Length: 306
Ligand code: FAD
Image 1: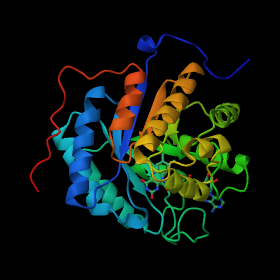
Image 2: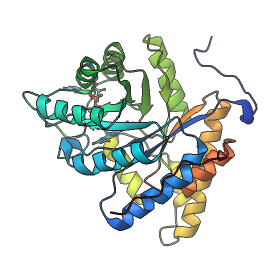
Image 3: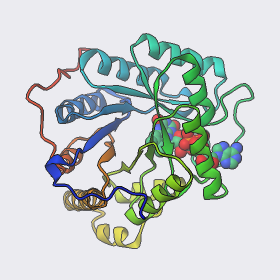
Image 4: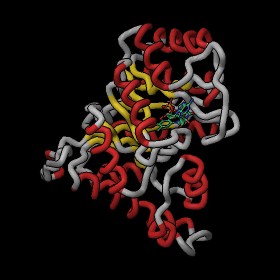
């Protein structure tokens, strides 16, 4: 018997849940883009929105500022990404205390990439949390936070094999994580096989597919190589020859992402996490296809003057 729930309900009652990931803006122009995107996507009623955090605390202030604004100015549930790589525990604990004071009760707990980039060898900080599982325990020792963690359908490049990789996920769950979001992937068979593997290992938390709309094929293909995400030939073929044609490329990207998500719905999955890259159009269109419509009263997301 399949371990997956494979019901095929009509979209409108499919109980679709979405969440949106943003990154902290580095300029005024980027800030405007972010807040416009939040204003466009918030009325779709996401389960939560999250904001990334640079490894080693490189975006510490900007992430905190973005999250504080989201908490103050919207009714959205806000999850703060937190990485621990390269930092002593006391520094990470100070960040946790800051978020607690700002009203944050949900973290996406991560080890983070070393400064040399994803997939490169590194030594953790001698007095630091060494991995995602240790960070989850540290967070739970502080307060009963909701904790989301990462998962890797194609295994993390640091993991020698799937057993080691899934063991790390199990340790995160044992320490209190209640949801995992996956690294982005393009092959739904790979994701489905991964979920079955995870269930066989006795892990029953939601494994939410992380969906990355392809805004720039060359860029995402390079990044995928570093993260261990396979880029199928069929995907490369779809973007072939469109290098100097951003408009057509954007239309193809919409079709590809919609196809991936609708196929996952057909396979019985109902929760989706979108790596928005702070851009709303494509994600909004996919959510529309999923049957999501704006709520009557949208939260106020007007940026406050700097
Ligand atoms: P962990 O889960 O701790 O480890 C990853 C894997 O590496 C494990 O499965 C484990 O098997 C293996 N591993 C760990 N340590 C060892 C070891 N010593 N020896 C052998 N194998 C080992 N990065 C950011 O910088 N900021 C973000 O905001 C951010 N958000 C993300 C959100 C999501 C949903 C995902 C999937 C990734 C995100 N990342 C982010 C990227 C992430 O930080 C990197 O993938 C990082 O390399 C691993 O972090 P982790 O918490 O997944 O690591």
